[in-house]
Image (cartoon, rainbow, N blue to C red; front, side, top):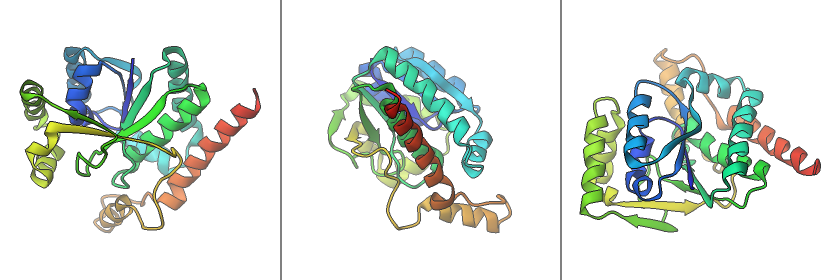
Length: 240
């Protein structure tokens, strides 16, 4: 049984067709008012929640990053690794590291390090969350009319709780979501190049507006967490 890991409830809508066909185990990092809708949708599609399902509030997730709380992050990775070791899924799919939201980017780190810790042959894939849905074409799932209609109906049902739906449809067009595309993750430790991620700019704007008190930065916060996971993986490998 395949696995899927997403940062927030609602992201599963982007892979509605793939979930319906493959019935994966689905992990959701954060909770919130949409989690119940996500649980209902997964049940209706024949998928099931994973060991990590709404474990952190958004506030707790961002605090984990700001505080560079590698112990908490490692506990999530270890828990996922244990389930991967039991299930031995062929693939695990996660939110792409697009530099848009740091919690999205954590999905790449968590999935990749969990595979390494489990010693599993699981292959890691990702899908676009905010970028164009055809950004990856290693695996492409073209939805038939019924699958597409079901996906759009589910999206409309979530629209009141998930404002991003309208933004994504306006940006890319509804027809773009007839195809769901996955890309292979070659290096789970890669979190972008020298250019500052968008979440830093968003954070700076919110700090200036006094909505946030601190900006999450890739170099100061994300890379230390990545390095802590990489060290944990290496230590585990040396122990065997």
